[in-house]
Image (cartoon, rainbow, N blue to C red; front, side):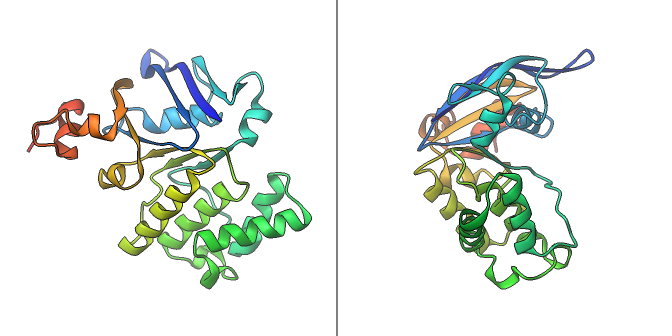
Length: 241
């Protein structure tokens, strides 16, 4: 299983949001996708998942084009957006059942998928509660549960630990590491410690263009200090501390 971005570009009028973005990722790997605010990370991730059409370029999911064969490509993707919409009046379990049905699951497969995602995301204490009554951390975990319930071969996650406490972050990072066994995973984050915690590779963009793509150790070696924040500052135009 491979996800491959091929010369992705996105324009808003005369403004370039993402320019000539190309990379590929195989299964069993986790790519950390980082860059300063406004760099084009979320736009890129939306194009990867087929939510936003590129101005040019394409995305291939195991050879299926997100533009020319979107149904086949999207079946293989799980997407955790940064601000995922939730049906606040639904309970956690009923929402996941709804999402599973939208994914084409039914009967025993649906029941097993819902139960598994609730267990993996530690949602048992709140599975019967309405989503609008939950804390931000639990809502984030509900969003993650819907993204993984169909065992996607490609998992794209935008700020997966946003709003979680330290214990919850540790649990989600452990889950990400376990899911790499059968998935190619892209994690967009502004939390640099997440790069060390779960990622094999780092893709850094600035002003819509790729400025680094390599292993975590190669990324760290770019700064004499070896500190991730110093490398990030150097690549994004900031001043290392």
